[in-house]
Image (cartoon, rainbow, N blue to C red; front, side, top):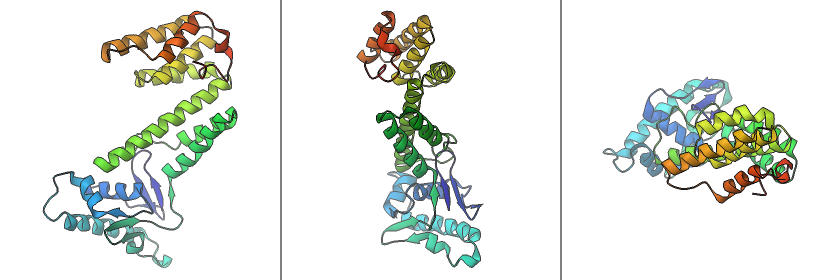
Length: 266
C-alpha cells in the first residue's frame, strides 16, 4: 500500500487508488492514512468529521463510511493475496486501523531524510545535508492533504507537516549558503520571501546571499521592505537578530563572508 499525504491524498493498493470522491469518506481515509498502523478511535473520527455538532448516531454513520472504504479496498486487492478488506482496514475495541505489510508513506520517508539532513547540517557536513534535505523536499507535491476537507485532527497534522517542511527548507538553504551557492539561491529566496513576507529566516538568508554577491544595497533594501511590512502589519520591529545582521551589512563585517558561522553569529 502506497500512502501520500504530502500533497493531494494518495492511497493505492496494488497500484489501484482507493481514495473516494465523496468528501466525508475521503476525510475518514485521510485520518486513518495519516495514522497508518495505529488505531484511530471512533470518537476521534467523529470529532474530525463533525466537531461539536455530530449527527444522530455518529458511530453508525462512521460505520457506513468504513463499509464504503472497505468496498474500494476489496476491489483493489489481489484475490490471490489471501488478504481481505477487513485485514487492511480492521476494527479494534473502540476504533479502526489502516495497515498492510510493506506499506510505504511519503511523510515517513520525508521525516527520515529530513532528520538525517538536519543532523548532517549540525555536524558540519553541508553537502550531505543539502542532498538529504533536497530529497526530502522533493517528496512534496503541494500543501499537505491539499484535496481533503480538514477538521481538528487533520488540521493539526497538516500544520505539523508544514512546519517540518519549513524547517527542512531552512536547513537546505543554510547548507547551500555554507557551500558557497549564494548566487544560485537569490532567485529562489526572492520568490520565497514574496510568498512568506513575514518569515524572518528567509529574509536573513536572502540578505546574506545578496551581500555575498556584492549587492549590499539590495540586501539593505530587503531589510527595509521587511521592516515596513512588520511595522504596518504587526506594529513591531524585526528581531534583534535581523537588526544585527543589518548592522553587520552596513559595516561590511568580515564575519559575513565566513560560510559556516555567518548567520549563526547574529
